[in-house]
Image (cartoon, rainbow, N blue to C red; front, top):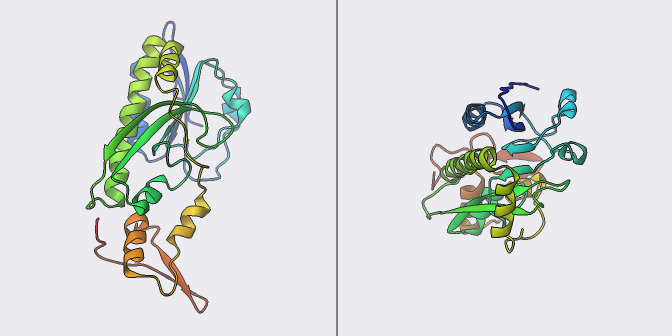
Length: 241
């Protein structure tokens, strides 16, 4: 755990979960300190990573999760006297993992990001705000990923500013404004994304292009198993990227 605190008179205590090697996380940490929060910062590096023991000693007003890979237990969420808020990189129609991938696979023309209250379930708490932006047919995975992170950063920065100025009243106002917005379906898991990336013999050209556009990165390309051998897609140029 990286405890980088900045205490000022009447400061609001914030437990902020970010991601390692993420410029957006570092900029939000700096912004929270500039605003005068008493910040405890914890960053994640990989899925399945254990929370540092010291984090369970925290107690304060707000918990913010931005691109964090940790699953926050109910016992820790309860230590926030105000609200525990997650900034999800997808709209309410795509809860869980692989939200951008499945949206591109579905061929949507609009995507977005969501701020919501946290509970013990993934992407299940009451929705506070949704921001949307258009997607064109020429947009590839990395294009949409970057724009998503930018929108998520702006949303989190707004919440930092408003919570610092107005406290829990801002959260109550958001809930009143978004009361009719609900999550759609169950949160997808990482295994669902892995299944989407697996190619099959006899796949059509159209389906192959959909999967490539939705899932291809150099680090995690689509793949196929033939006669016990696993082959992964390698391409110097992928359409839409």
